[in-house]
Each structure stands twice: as C-alpha cells, then as structure tokens.
Length: 134
Image (cartoon, rainbow, N blue to C red; front, side, top):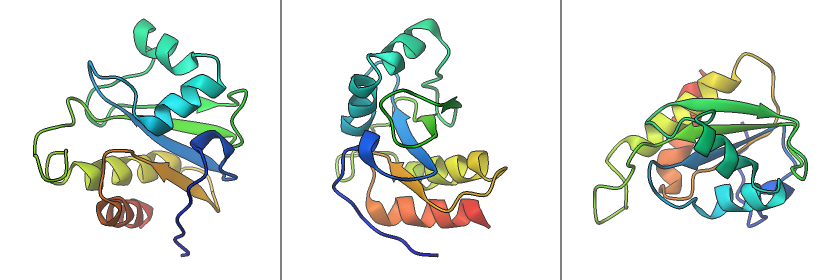
C-alpha cells in the first residue's frame, strides 16, 4: 500500500474515490467546501434536505458529481466533531471516521482513495484507513 500526501484541492485529486467529512450545525471544512463550490452547492443542498447525514459515522455515497475528478465522493458525518483543545476532535474520532469510510468503499476494488478529513491529525487518518481496508 502506498500512502502519499497532496496539497491539491479535493475536487482536483485524481482518485477512484474521494472522502470528505461534514459536521452537525457547523460550516463545511475546507475540502467539503471545495467540493460544494465545484458542484454548485450540491453538498449544502443535500445536507439541508437530509439526504446527507451529518450524524457521527453516517455516510452518503455520491457518484458522478460534476466538477469532481473522482467518480464517487463519500461524505462521512462526524457529528459535533469538536471536543478537545489539542486536536480539535474527540479522541479516536478520526480513526473511526476513516475506518468507516474504508469499509463503506470496500465493496468495489479501488486503487486510489483520497481522504480529506479536514479536522483530523494525519496519523489517525492513516491508521483508520489501513484498518478499514483489512
């Protein structure tokens, strides 16, 4: 397994699936906001209509979004998502979010998955992603 880092905006990352996170009653993080802008506000509209869950570990698969290089975007809810001052997140939340995303995407073979969970430390994201793959 190769793990790489990129500074590309989420909509421009060439991958088989793109994972973004959304919080309850909070503005979109940078990656989700980039996806929202690139799609003309689809993320905001789907959250407002209840089609995208912001509850913790709720997820929604969105295939074929215009303006996004990835053929599928997985939106994972993180609930309130902010509790601790040091990392801005509850302990273990990043791990659970990325493991949940990996399991949700595991039904089909994918060579490249881009995880863009804006609020989380990268080591927790990597650990969760790997765990979800096995």
